[in-house]
Image 1 (cartoon, rainbow, N blue to C red):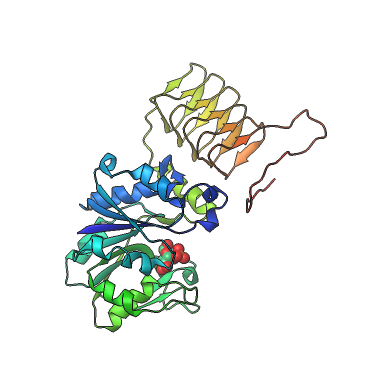
Image 2 (cartoon, rainbow, N blue to C red):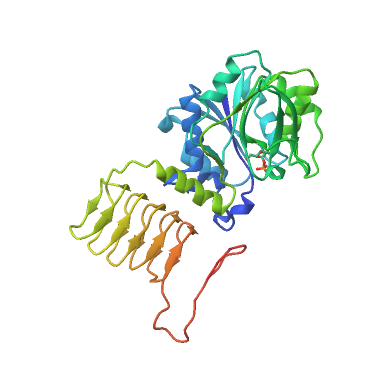
Length: 357
Ligand code: G1P
């Protein structure tokens, strides 16, 4: 079985972070989202992975994943070019798949429990496809499946106005090569995209058997800033405290703190886990880093108060203001205007930014 990891999309809901990089490289607990998908595929015994790239952030994804050897997998890159929908992206992988069964994993989705159960469920029967589902509160915003008592799918519909159930497709699919004929047969949806949901419905209409697995443990589509923060919180919840870096004698470090070897927490700083601090980062005196915060590499935090936030990295935060529930992009500098006249906040704010002051 092969893996097809979809890493296209514009990341419009994560702007401005995604102006300079693809959404799949946004870090959750200091690890890019896409790496979680690679690890889930590998855990399911899948090491031949085709990564389908869009136009955005192609080089960045390739330079991060390389040939896959750093992650114990073998990666082939496939360029989708125009963003014509998930089904189109899957169709681009046809020659890579080369007649095998394969798992499709949306590269901005994360699952606590991985994909082993979904793959095993598909393998246990004679199915033409398998889908992973989870109950959601807002079924109009997802692909939705109707399922009978035996878990057999009876109907699929993309972002329904009148949802037949609240079981959402969570971006993990298992396919046989039959899906490629279905992709050929479907027409673009109202949003102008070839929907993978419609392709699976076509397979069903054609007499195909579709397995479904309702997955346990959390699942997150990290498309929006609040989802990234929530995923970060969920991953940090299970964090191991390594504390490999240096902690000054009168720094106060409480709870589970993952501190990279080259990083330090200076005296007079307070860090209350769960917190992850990546390489070459200094938490200086007068700083409070509160629960559910991940601070990326090569950053300095001085005199600041930050919690429940993701700091991507190469960042300097020296404001004395409180930073909460924030997603702070690479290379950002957040200082303080105190003592300067006229008083007020001095901002350089990117297009489509969201600030709450
Ligand atoms: C896509 C799929 C949808 C699925 C969702 C999961 O939606 O079209 O069926 O439920 O991913 O994250 P999109 O993110 O393109 O709106």
